Image (cartoon, rainbow over all chains, first blue to last red; front, side, top):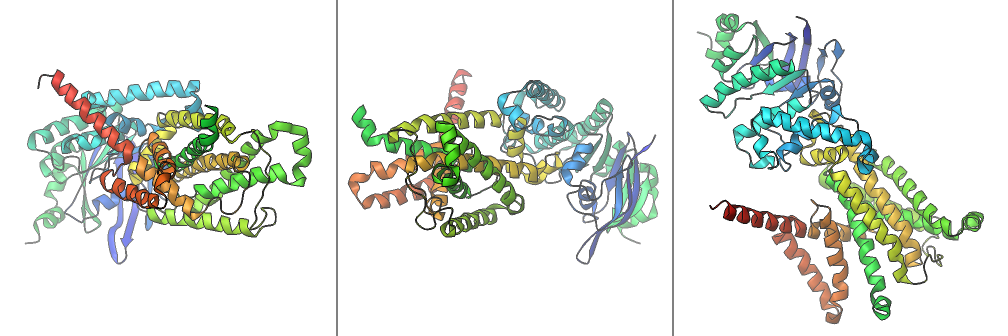
Length: 254
Length: 303
């Protein structure tokens, strides 16, 4: 296995608050990597640093050796890093199919005039984009509602559609920010299987933030624990569970 | 028929022309950008055409090209508008929402004051006696009409293309669009340039149509009128701005018997529409169609 993502002393301050403080870790190709920690530990900020939505204060982040720090979000997405958002950010007024068509943007090249006059490239691309859109909607089980607007979907369906949208980007790495939030027990069960399935199907590396501990323990190959912006432990679920610093962060010192 | 065109030909051409200007707002709006810069580019396009049609410097061109000088005017007006839109758009589109609207109004004002004071634009008097392309006012439908058709086809095709989808994504959620690989700045500037090119070409076609061109073309008032077209008609579909333009631009004519009271009706239509038709007439029609379809579907489903 080789390293696909590597953070080196990644930091971000908001005023006097060190939201992420000198965090270093490496994610191996093909693994499911969990990011846990109490509320306000800096997990989402770390995701935002990784995807360019928040500029880093210091430190570096690389993807297969390519420096990502300083790149705008669309370039990072174009390199193959797809993500979902904690507070779902679908294109709500557009149909499910349009949502998954839009994120194929970086895999297509049709320009303004090619699209208007219907050049050969544009026609071929439209067919491919449409087909792939349907394929991904089928995968997440939303194909029967493809033409409905995203705002009409239930919470769980919106989460699935957001994953579908990120998959349509054809990513190498999928970042999931609390994919199980608001799901019931049965839905969480099927989510675990689903994440494994897409990982195998598309040869993905998955990094996920999750609060639900049983889900994380059952799903992830390795887990990193953040507390007050600092990385306090990295390791297999068993190692992390026994780590005194982790127990202290979650339960408080005795 | 001849008499009808004599009386209403000017109005009909004006309606098409105003529809086109309303649509020039629609393009940036489809990428979520509220720009009121269209009157500025309209004025610019008109000046380009007026100068090319009257200035001594262009006399050899006119002699050499004959009637073909007109399409050349449109082309150059479009190119100049595109260039200026790019230069203005790159910094201005860093602003969002109402701040962008204000910046574009400022742009229109600056352009107006500049044109008022330059010698080449004829100063306060402007440029008059612009050579005609057609014998009657009505004849101009033969240039505005095809432009409207081309614009509608363009807009329809754009909506179903990769670039159009990028516009929509930015309109819906700019941050998420960026995270999905779309370069927001690139497409915001592109949408702004498309709107500017359209306004510039309409201006260039309007210069001979109106016979004179001065700094009263393309003012803040015009910005507000075009915005009203879009608000009344609906900014979410390509029919909306056109519908709004036809309705609002013809209202003063339809209400002519009421004399000055028509201004009150004009204002009332705006207020009522903004309360009861938040997505404009096109939005209301869309919802009506959806609910009818649903009722039809439930009847057929036996529910």
